[in-house]
Length: 313
Ligand code: SER
Image (cartoon, rainbow, N blue to C red):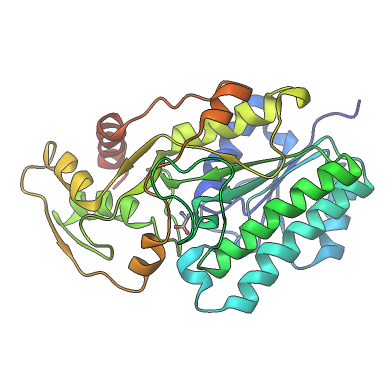
């Protein structure tokens, strides 16, 4: 079997930065090739520039580096996606199709595709959302991920491509900032609490959404990718959960550490997106098939976030 060589797209994104580092600890730095459209000040080497719409360049990189696995993280998120629906569809869906095609052609070992709670919509049961439910997403991001799930399932059934996927909730971490998502407030609030003691939230105080600490998101991803092929029964995308809270609840948790912290609410267009998503998720399939179990709840996540951010801000 060829030596493991993992290509990460979107390696400079919120999850990509942390996942790249973690995978390098496991496989060694040289085995993890970071790619992205931009090279941020925090450079990750080895690195190649890659616009995911450039399928030819993707092929060259995969060939030159003998890539055996791809973690395809490059995407435009829910809120930003609404400013340019056609571009978002192109990047999110056509980017995935190029990845699946090259995985099929080269008979790659494994592919990871992140999906999201944005695949759910107003026709989905909102509380304890089961695995198999009506999907009628309200955003182009959700549409592209929902369709992407179907393509993953298709490439697995039709060509045997070993593609695995998780429906991430909102991800919260101190290591990196999200960009253009509806759940971004749950990261911004920590930075604001430490910098100014005040946060103006773009969602209403009682908007409950599923969330997860970065450590758990990385663990889930690595566990899923390490699970045996036979244990992965779902080839569209697994529901995944850790905690659910509202802006008011996270604010009151932060106040346990920063008593003078204040929050005001000024909902914008992102409120409509959030209201169409689930409040909580039933992830029993993930727990059953590959032993998923989160480690962080709202209290432990808040304490750990503040501890780390105090050092970095
Ligand atoms: N965090 C993402 C967003 O808000 C959801 O997948 O767009």
